[in-house]
Length: 186
Image (cartoon, rainbow, N blue to C red):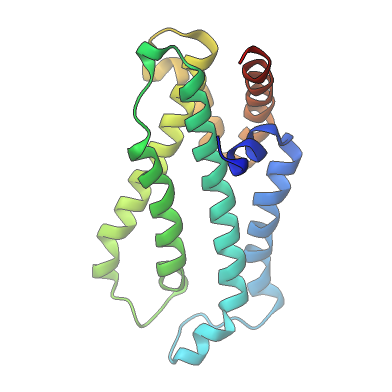
């Protein structure tokens, strides 16, 4: 297991919250504190937004690294008959980050990206985000119970992961316990 995954699996819920929601709150509040252009008429306008885009990228990387770490670890401790391949999870975790960084300015209101060209990448990013949360919540249920479950059996963890700032307080302690048990047993 990578050291990044181990960090996210050992971290306390408040550490995950601060590391991901802290930078996100700066991105949300910064346009009210600083003069941030609402549309981009020149490349120089993009440079004004560069620090915010860096913080946005850090936030996306943190959130998706956490969800990827959850999915891979929980899938590995689940019953072998219930495990799934993680290649699609890897793609679904990387694509929204790349999309968020590449198309982030268009979400604010860029004149450089046509809204018609943005529909498919935006839709794919949404599907990837849904799959990430679905995979992690499903893997959590399998790691805890080792039985096949329908979507309705893991809708609670799914919603907690989807509404991330709230769910991290409930999901991360369960992951910490599973991680400690896995380290002690193997």
